[in-house]
Length: 436
Ligand SMILES: [Zn+2]
Ligand SMILES: [Zn+2]
Image (cartoon, rainbow, N blue to C red; front, side, top):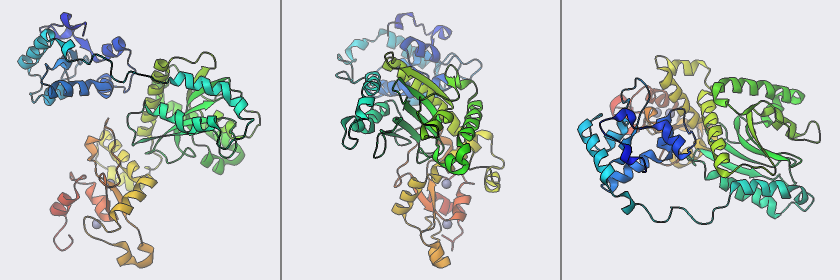
């Protein structure tokens, strides 16, 4: 707001860029695209707010500074679109900037900051556990206050930093039945895995001697242990290197490779957490950083997690997917893989089938009717969000409204059409009479 007087609609090249807003407001980077990152942190909401309240479109003072882009030195297309203007409508835009400069913004801003009041600090919570865990772990485990705190309270504090709550699941564990040597709080992308036992995820791991806590991009260890036995640690280290290489520069300033959790017994599960770390940040007891810094690190780790998720192709190297992806641009192929990943999430697919039943919604095919007992409760879950709209958006995962069920044929076919999100339309357009 204090910069407003310096803004001049005749000189867009001097206006403030997406990246500069991050620096000026101390925002963390939430996407590799600065504009997208700002969007996620309220630029869109602010624009919508001005529209809803008939105020000057002030977000027009923030411009795209990406060299050579269509909207270089102007706000993005979304800005003009929101106000029902053609892209790059100069006269309207400069008019909005001038009236934003002359407007009395104090009169519409709330007098007390939104969300003020008692806020518990995550930094203090981490220190609290480091200070009390050792004593607690000599006491009775069941119903212990600290165990409850780690299980219930701590994940909620991290959850406040997670934007897409239907996609990411938070869990805290002080151990099962007995105190764990290494208590943790994890963030799991439900599109990657249902459990911390496989895939990869983010986790806060407390050192066994309570000397500090790591934020680690780590791997599920149970299934690796099952397949590799005593070679599990070695396998995890190798995988960690591979994942790190996929991240490229994104891992940046953070520590690469294994971590030291001061595990007492060789062969304990904690040794596998140590080996499984792809990349980590360490916070030492007594000097845990402020919440601002913790949150900024956390968002960067989320960014890395998202990046690896998008590149994750474990399920998709087979002949079927090559068929389905033939002729698609790389970006579209990536979105299709994401879509299939959603549908492969076991718990979501199961719920979708429970609510929609086991008959194909397009052609009415019933596996049990045709094949008898082996076809019982067989059907495929299909996610209804159109492919092109998914990128950068919060993924809606309501089994009732965001999914339907299709037989295997209709499912393969609907993905070849532009009516991926509309089964009625697909029926009407593609299914011959007699099959509908
Ligand atoms: Zn069908
Ligand atoms: Zn589908």
